[in-house]
Image (cartoon, rainbow, N blue to C red; front, side, top):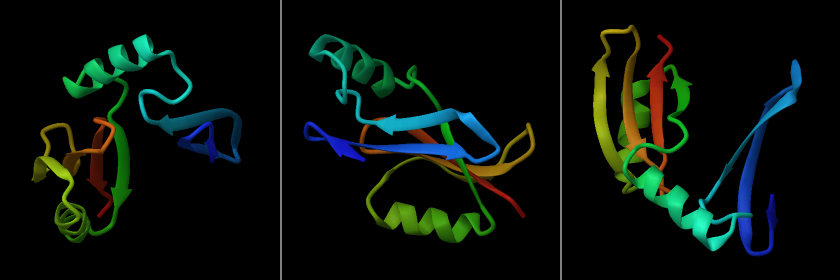
Length: 102
């Protein structure tokens, strides 16, 4: 969606119509002061998130995202808590983790 020069993405599940996750830039719909405060929190890893996705081919998706120029925070590795995953920072500063499903 878009409005007032900003774009955002709303995610939800039909089985839970009362829950929606909205992804946006720190300044979207916020005062300049709140946007700056949120941007500082996100930049140092203290903001909302991480945002987590899953894929059945982690290594291929990792290479695709890395080759796009995304900031790599962690290459694919087995985590002590279970999943094999990797991590990036999106253009707005959010941490995005990608878990392997297989």
